[in-house]
Image (tube, rainbow over all chains, first blue to last red; front, side):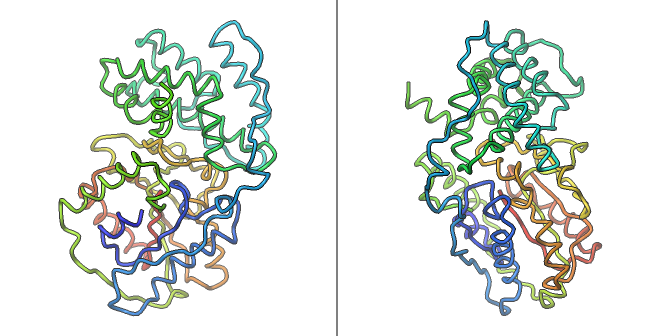
Length: 227
Length: 160
């Protein structure tokens, strides 16, 4: 944020117009990333005594600069229309439906970032549902605080979903995949339920997790506006 | 960075509150400016606040532990790195697709191979960045010493 950089008076800074979380603009666009990086590094060669120097990067990220067909009508082609017997079955089904896309994502990228808890998405989802039913359910790693155990499991599930959906054909804005996760999946709905449970917990690590680190502020705001 | 005007009003307020916090404590009135050799001779390290670490390393946590940093070897394979930042209010899908969108090590290696920069440091570092800014000062000094020992004379700070 420009305002923060101005307040801190960093000697040399490049302001970029990209969404939070993408300081070099666009994934898988080496040429664009290079332009951003060079614009920042060139500040090192500014004549002495000019600081603080705050320059603007003049180009929006390509993905953000216009709509276009590829960004419209985002729908995740996974069949969530069945009527499973209960939440646990519905969630397992959803995870299973995304497995092929996730496998393709891992093959192409050579990595997954869904690797914080050490749990598979299926096991992580069961742990979360078990916790919702019984807040004393056994930890999957005894050394973790309960709040951290939930956070790592939730982060892994979210990463699994978003890696999978971003592997599907077509390019989409980051916000579209996020909106899909929170509005249209069993996982998103369960996380919102989990938040309510966390807020009522006597365990401070769980309460803090529910308060600030589970559901994004934008999603909470949208939920409040609906109610 | 992002435009404040792109954010909804409540998010804008949240961000402006952080600016007020920075200004309230003072301490940023100086004008530090250090000149160095030309870019083609510089040895560059990256310090990220994306909460990155190798998958076997400790995940980031709140409280006093939020001032911790993790070491990222320059030779690291992208597949080794995960993100355990506490905040869920920024995009992670870019990082999931391509680590260079937060930690541009491949781009730096290319620039070094072309002679645009001198070299890439042996070690890079990641904080989570959600800690109160003044509590990070001792860690910053500690890191400055480590960077000097790595012969680094250019540091790219990459916030998320």
